[in-house]
Image 1 (cartoon, helix red, strand yellow):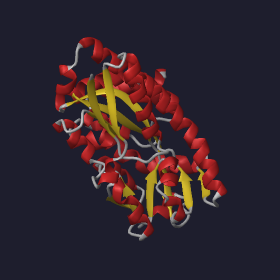
Image 2 (cartoon, helix red, strand yellow; image 1 turned 45 degrees about the horizontal axis):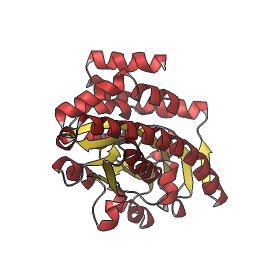
Image 3 (cartoon, rainbow, N blue to C red; image 1 turned 120 degrees about the horizontal axis):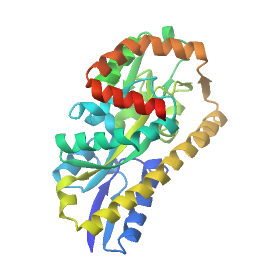
Image 4 (cartoon, rainbow, N blue to C red; image 1 turned 180 degrees about the vertical axis):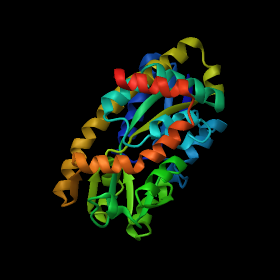
Length: 308
């Protein structure tokens, strides 16, 4: 029997953790028990930073993990296609992009630039802005310290809105919020609720500025050691887990929204005019990101987005 070590960084209720559990079950089923997954649900609970998953998987300490695509964008610039704020309007179209020719192209780019192979694309959540004080307009963002991902493209976009962005590992995010080291942060509703951020940040602006993408990554050398039948079984298992994880993510938005409102958190929808104002304020920075991609890749993205 072959055991593959798969790592995560979130808690028991996380849609990623639940997806990882489906993966473990599916691998055993798809390979008739010849391959199993040992799922370390949260390396953070053992004192690691969440971002350590990447180095642990690439070095072979782990065989696989899930992680935000944004953290690999410096090494694989093409992944920045999904860091275009206010561009991809909904989940359905994002999934169509990921599951088509563009997703295949990105798999190739990751394989060329890293020691990973991408076996799937998970839903890392529609991202919204939470804050200790209400945000109703672009002007309200001015001067607020905002926690965001360790990605320069993201930070440029939020500077354009007037925020003072700070990259903080997710392990340290709850403490940064409760101690008021940051005034605001951006995350999916599931993280806002499960990390307890809503206990300090009582206001959420439902910007839906990005649909985060979590890559399902495996160590390329380890995959090469698998027999073709086992490799194919692993891919089928990831495909099954991906469909389940995406359903979990969509359902969780409704569950978390209702729970946050029940706990007295103010959730504010963007009207069309305000959404346009946010999009216009950030568009010059999004265009800078787009300019870093080849014309051919931009055309592929735009073509598939229009067709989705």
